[in-house]
Structure formats: structure tokens, C-alpha cells
Image 1: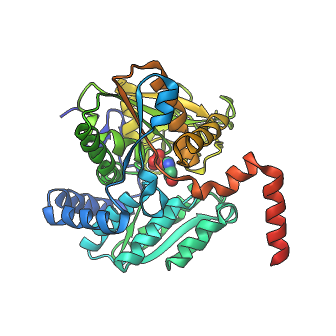
Image 2: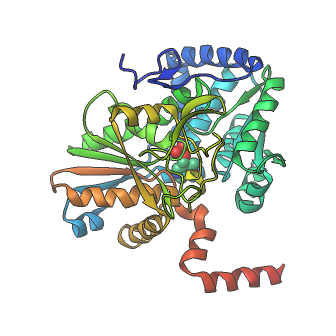
Image 3: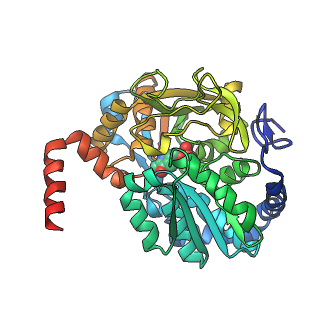
Length: 410
Ligand SMILES: *Cc1c(COP(=O)(O)O)cnc(C)c1O
């Protein structure tokens, strides 16, 4: 079994593992056992698929970006429209899978961490659907920055708990969730939002997100496309690894992960861990590549897209980068914004800022290829959630006036 395809002894090459306090060993062992039983249980997958169709809106379409392709004169560009999934992004696939697993284990309560709030919203919606109690830990600063998502989580009946420790952002929310879980695991599942964390989370999240890759494979085969490259943005890495999963054991197509290049390569100005900027480390329960300072502490990161603004990368993608099966590129903030604008005007589709990093690089790659070839980019999310950031960047004066008048009205 190739090392990069399935974790062996909980590792992907040198990355992965399970570096946790003693008290979390038992819940992780039990989780691994149940996960592995569920993977070969047809009933489990039938339920996952039914909720996928009825609640998530699967399969998501594969759109031919006809106008962009004609303008480029290179490969035919296709967009996997994952952003049309319920709650606006791929995160719901993993939330459904893990919540079903929790229910199978007889758990009544779900806890989750969230940074920008997208994972929190997906989790809250799924818990409402499945009748599970839901508590979401969120840094105080993120709560202030991401008010609309806090509102939606509460609308779905979740309790949003402000975290006041440390930098009051995502990493502190993870620590708080782990503390909760250490005391509550007999009736509680910790639903991690990306393909990272201690084993078995990276495997579990990949399996639930690989529905994106399986559909893409069926859709491109049905059209008879000669797929030369798949492109996806990489935060923690869940949409990318799910998109790439069916192709990992073959040499083609090219698999391209796009990280947040931010405003430059200096520390603090980006969130790119690959290409020599990250270093091996062990953070929050797993070994991978992280952005660290000279003392080995996690560095601050920057990206215009909250979902890519994270110092670590999932261990399987770190390993696939080391083996060369996945190529990594960067897109800067301004390139992502420009890609949002281009796809909106040319295709009538608004990418999430995260996904637009992949969109920007997909346009470059398609331009270098031939018309008989195809490139598919995963639009991991739609851009509705980014209204405040995009309008602030692209139409600042008018947007400011609108916000002020809204404030006056209240
Ligand atoms: C959260 C998020 C991401 C980044 O997470 P991954 O685990 O790397 O996929 C990317 N796109 C969107 C739309 C997101 O909400």
C-alpha cells in the first residue's frame, strides 16, 4: 500500500501521528475503531449519500467555463461547483460524515472549533438536522470579525462559546475544544473541520471529503475529458485532499495545491507552508510543516481569505508535497481578488476568496496547455460570505457609506 494513499501506523511518510495527552488516547482509539467499522458498512454510506442528496444538494455540478476557456486559448477549464453545497462550501461533507459517526457511537453532543465560522456553520446546520446538541468554540477576536457566521450558528441552535485565552483566535479555540473533550468524551464527539489533527482525523476527513473527487471523476469521464490537471486551494487541506483522493495512486493528472501567498514572502505576510517556508513541527496533536519562528513558536499568518489563514498543513498533503505527487503554488491576495472578478464577469459565478486562489492558478495552468486537454478547479466555496471583505476592497467608499447608513437606521 503506497504510503501517501493511506496512513500506515498513523503516519503519512514522516508526517501525521497522534501527539496528545494521555487522557485523549482512549477517545481517539474508540473513534478509530468506529471509523474503520463504518468505512466498510454499506448502511453507513447509504445514509451519508441520502443526506448528501436531500440536504447537501449533491452531486454538485461541473461547470464548463466556456468564456474563460475561449479567451485563454489553452486547455478547457471546468469548475467543480462545490460552493453550491448547503451552507456554501465543502465543509458540510465532513460535518455530515462525522456527525453520522458520532450518532453511530451513541453520542448526543458535538463540539467543534471554528476560525472564520464556516466550519461552525456547517456543523451547526448538520447538528440541527440530526438532532444533536452543538457547542462551537470560537476566539473572541474571530467572533467580533465574523459576526454574520456567529448569527447563523445561533440560528441553527448552536451555542457559540467565546474563547478569551491566548491570541483569542482559532488555535485557542482548538485548545478549548480539546479541554472540553478530555472531560466529555463519553457522550461527546469532537468534530474537527479540516484534514489535520491527531490520527484518525486526517484519514476520516479525507474519506468524507473524497465525495468531491469521486463525483468529479464520474463527471469528467462522462464527458470524455482528457483531464491534465486538478487545482484546489489549501488551508488545512480538506477540500484539496478530498478532490485529489481518487487520483493519488496514479501518476496523472497533475494535482496542484494553491496556498495563500498573502502580500509577500516575509514572515507574517502569508500562510504558505510548502516551498521551503514551513518547517517540521508538532502542533495540536500532529506532525507536519508549520510556519514557526526562531523559538519554534507558531508564527502569525496573513491571508485575505480567512479559510486559508492557518499556520499548518494537513500531514498527508505535506507528505504528498515531499514525494512530489502534489505540486504547490501560491496566489497572492490581489490575484485572488482579480480571479473573483474575472470568474464573476466571464462565467456568472462568484468564487469564495479561498477558492479564488485555486481559480487564479487554474487560469495560469490552463493557458499553458492544449485545447484537447482539460483543467478542473475546485470552487470549494461560493463568495456570498465574503461580501463585506470584497465590497470593502473593490468598492470601498460606497460600501462604507452603506454601512454607516445601516448603523444610523438602527
Ligand atoms: C475552510 C475553507 C477552505 C480551507 O479549508 P481546507 O481544509 O483547506 O479545504 C477553503 N475554501 C473554503 C470555501 C473554506 O470555507
